[in-house]
Length: 315
Image (cartoon, rainbow, N blue to C red; front, side, top):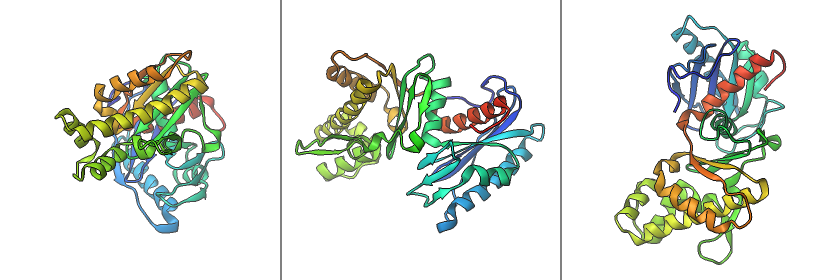
């Protein structure tokens, strides 16, 4: 994980970066020499139909706080990433079910508040690009980054470029997988996410558990139901990953998010199950993400620096 003092490389100037999440907004300054300074977190405001406006008001306040913390730096651009469906080219947050905005002009509104050019994008895409450029995906041209937490989303990198499709690409969690009961299909997020693992274990066993890590602990202690639920999650994940490999010819699959913290307990059986599903297809490397929870923020900083380097237009 990149922390204070880790170089991102040189850029034409200092930049700010902001990552808006459902719980908090993270912000940081990155110096021209590539130092990622302390990450500051503030609660994400909720204000009904004005939530998007309230979020940018908070971003503005956070920007002033960051500048006050590092008076020797002067940001020349900013990067902003948000969840939901995002049209990065148009600078619009198309839709967010959790935060409640529709077709909000984030880039223009953020530029007005900050007085800076803003590179705007999607949080998971941003995290994926960061992993591709600086993390576990570095050195590959064709990469899938899949983030497994409460939900599941990801980034497709093809020929070194992210596939965005106007904000609709990367919704891995809603891809169809065989239902573990064998009676039909379900969406991947309902079987393979961290939240689903905990929920399904509780439903089948009748025992409450402290998230997916609680299921893992019970599996390691010999709990048969926990082992079944864990194996079914891996089977569902391998189904979607194998389909991606077949369609895209992916060289590497980078697994991030909270569930990836299980390490080899997740990755070893996942590699094995994907290998069992493949025949003639390319055999990708399946790797654990390296940049941690700040990957989206790092990606936002990279986009802001690219905007500066380009000298015009928007990233």
